[in-house]
Length: 256
Image 1: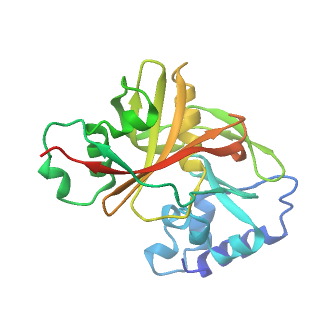
Image 2 (image 1 turned 45 degrees about the horizontal axis):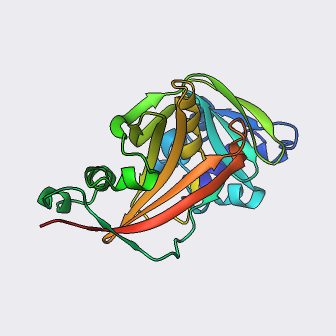
């Protein structure tokens, strides 16, 4: 990411001198547009692109230097927060489990293309997701973009309270079983970390819609290996209470 647009934003609103120990810095999309209007390239002034900081490494340098991260709080408003906004997605060192597909044929269409949805759908069709979650009742019921209801939570080193209202989330796949909801964030990129928001916002969103237990998983397919990480929150109202609960990697053995 070109650091200049964010330097311009920080300068325009004196953000470097903000007391982050007292409160996050709230920033609107209109303010971002005004501070970057003199840039020519779309990537240097498009709000969505500038605020998409999905890994620690994708943050602009000034965020890294000051230990900051950014979260959407409502449509067109963001909070810049001091603290750890990301969670590690550790390499799985355990032996790869050879998993026997529950399909009685090999779906050739699963080998055409390389999309996140495609790999998830194949893992579900083979019953691998049910196996990892130890729940044979899971069925695909959730997918795509939705807006969150209102909810509050604590975040960052100083445990500031944020109020969220109508923030767009995107769920790659969600499954409902008799006693639980399983939400999955899928990536192809081999990311070593991810912003907690991608797991936490859907987690809180679906907690308001159901009394069933809500689980959140991170998924990755690399070559022929399907990897899953299950995360949980020891305190549902604290963004930074995220913990890795289990992980495993699989190779699917098809029936010919």
